[in-house]
Amino acid sequence: MIDLRFSTALQMVLSVALADKDGFRCTSRTLAEGLGTNASFIRKLLIPLTREGMIVAAIGKGGGLHLGRAAEQITLRDLYLAVMEDKRILVAREDVPARCRISANINEFFAEIATDAETAMLDALDRRTVADSLAELLRLDAIRMKRLMKATNARRANLAANGVTRT
Image 1 (cartoon, rainbow, N blue to C red):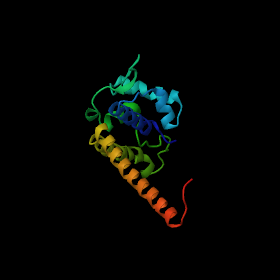
Image 2: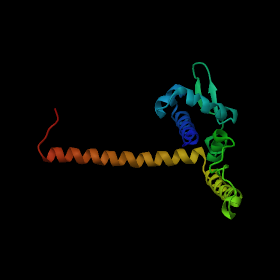
Image 3: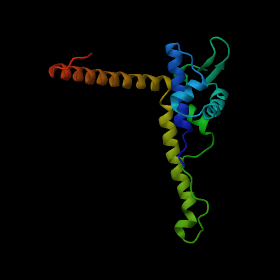
Image 4: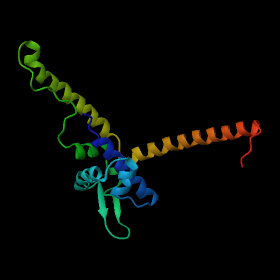
């Protein structure tokens, strides 16, 4: 089964960071709607994120969700470890009977591979912050918007060349 906690939590934190940057109110309901998931899943993920100080919830007129510390101070590694807790990314089968030299040693061998892979992944996540990630997403969005504008202008030009006018 694919675990969606990290990818969902990442999108949540990035959405909260963008809301903070743009001055919009962000709530668990708006996150659930934006992510196309149910609010209870969002609230479950908010527990470790608030416990680790990445997100704070405020009540009242200016209430909602906000980053608990600067986006530059939250690494994707921090986020991953908060929501995934002790879950390993690769796990060996425990029910392998020791019938040959392979099956007798596979768990120890696989544990070494899994540790190496997890270390590499966590190191990669540690090199990215929420601020870096948000900047990259906004850069990608600017490219997307340019493409859309170009396509819209091309359609308009095509319609005009074919004598189609808007009503």
